[in-house]
Length: 325
Image 1: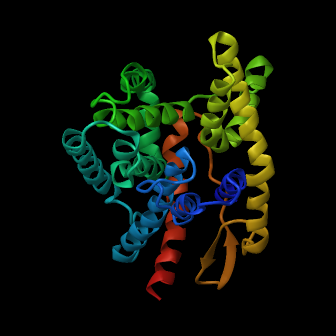
Image 2: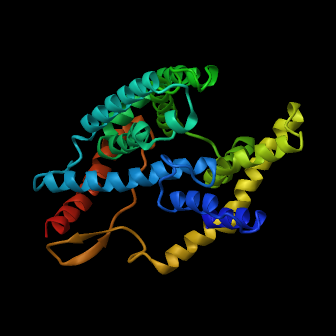
Image 3: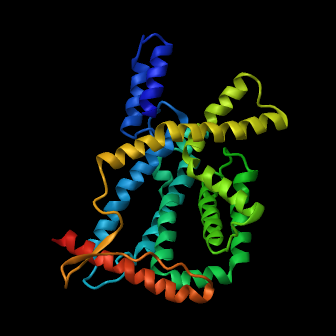
């Protein structure tokens, strides 16, 4: 809807004359080619990368389950090795690409899918550790929380100091960036946050903004361009207008387009059951999965890990039987 909406607005603006230069980028967006070919809007390139990744990831997981042995509670045990290989290859390709392709350009050095897959796979790796090895993973994180915050800050620092055109930023800097923010995320998940008083009010506000974060990211450049057009992006007032305007416009787009489309999707493709289920082979009936047991402290990490790992393993065994049948 966003793609066709932008296309129609541009066609109307130019009186529907010489439509080829407008329709062609729209087709790039429709088929998710905009990480390699120009699309209708700058930030849509990230949509292409995500779609490419979410096509490749299920195939990878499918083959890992397919190749696993019967009774194996962890068919994704080779995921850390796969991530390491992808991370090394992606970084090497970024370095070679930066050395051979000059001058620097966003489209050639930041947008291509094959240069960015490692960051998305790192998120999958963290989820794997959290779900399958949460006992050891939780204990390790809790023991090194302060160091994790410090190291994560140092990893993110180059991206905040150096220009994007600097070779360090768009090569090893991208690796530092996803490692740093991944470290922050994991550390924050292991900290108890209060929802009372001013802190609770602040967390609720941030949570509400986070629910609309993707449209905010997509369209903050549009807000910047309009503020620059009318010479309003100046000083503290200009920055305040930029932040408030980006958040407000992102929330508006969410409510007008994103959430209604998601509701329409759920209506057309309803979920078969209200909650995840596994098949009890012996009794030939469905049983709902229990909700994951959240650890109350680091002393609960070991039992929490076993409970979630065994629960997930049951689902994997059923999935494996369905795939092989």
